[in-house]
Length: 182
Image (cartoon, rainbow, N blue to C red; front, side, top):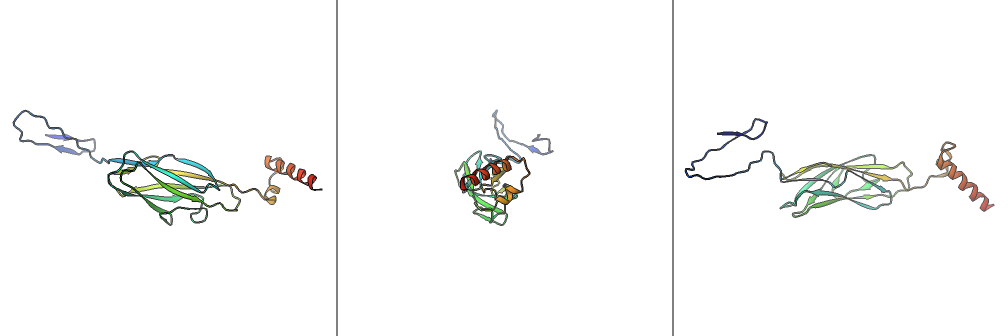
């Protein structure tokens, strides 16, 4: 007798030649995967001098064998200039999830430059697994915000509108400095 599996029109036909009263139970799963991978958090914020930042990818259950996990890089920061990531070529990369692991990290090295900017973002999105037993789940991306740690130059402070809190502070500091040095 055909038994519907789900609303997708798929059916399973079971037949048996059992003559004695017995019960056989089988569990079937259409489109099932053994586990999922996802980022531990959807966003992080670090200072530009943070060095290496490890982005953790978690697995809901450890795999029995290793498999590759792909990722894609985007955002306002430039790979190779503002940050580096091992295991990447261009804007894509891959890490190997070892057998038995419940997590793996994607290390991102932040470049502490002397460029004063408004901060930048790195978006790392999981692009797929090399295992039919694992699927990517939410959160499937993490946004890493890099906060600038470079001081404003005199020219930049001079361009701030009068009344801006930083401009007021800079004016006071300059006046105090001038008083001490004269």
